[in-house]
Image (cartoon, rainbow, N blue to C red; front, side, top):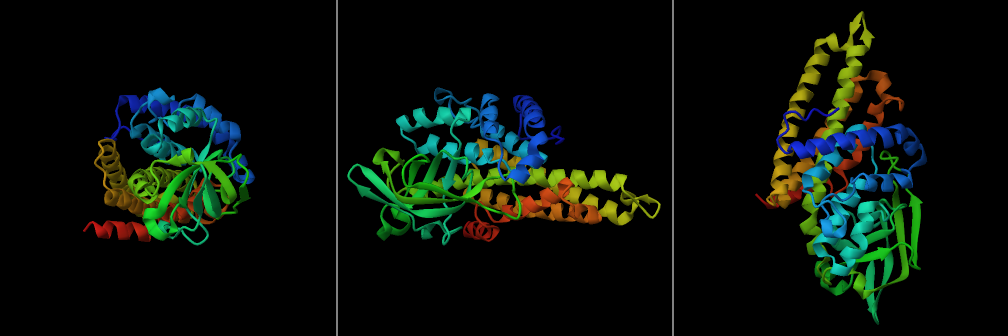
Length: 380
């Protein structure tokens, strides 16, 4: 269990909420984690169960069916999900997609979609990455061309979280290819429209329970009223919203790192070698002391970043630095903790194996850590 007694980002109400989140995940997620890993997807009714417990989109305003809370509540969910070792895509739904619709959606779009997202009726995704365009969002090729009162969308996306479950997708497309980044727009696409096709549920190194998919659009028509915000503003909107996405990743990464460390402490105190526990060897104790120190620094920094974000003060460079630092910490802690497990750590029956596998991609998604360094360097 995460020790939050000395945390500075949360108040009493956040902690009461955390207890409810823990109880829910203990009952509705933990018993199914191994099966979800094997099946490559979480149960569809997990979404509606999360919705019924108020665990989806907590920052959505009350007039649209949400709780109207601050990002601290999202962070609580991110941390607790990361700590149990789950890769369920509800954090992307709540922390990323919901904020785009709240910030840029029309009144009609908000009233139609947000209550369905809060309840879990409509799982969502955001389709940025393409086979030839990852961190460089200006390089996307998917097009949305006006035809009468519609947009006609053609193209493909890949590595899309929630790609199998999503019933609503924010598609990043070029509405005017001649304008470069200024010709990029965000368009809401319902999965039941003709021309929408899901590809494979991709076979990944880690995050096995997260449905990550290819999506294809072939002469797919949506009304122009499905445009999210203003035409040509897509790239600006993406840049505006990326700080919260990167902070969300940092929250999950820090909690995952803590769980890996906790698993290592427990294992080394129980496993014996040469007549004593592995923990009794000085190398083990010093290694764990080093990880404990790094985690202490990490929690202090994360609380600082969460507080700044709630206050509306977290900059893009600061969020990028947080994503960079916490995901690097995550992989280091997971890797060292696996080493402390010895051969057992390489066995899938031990949680550390899944934590290690899942940690590798966090330095890639949400913008690679090399891109994070580029963003930070531009602020110097």
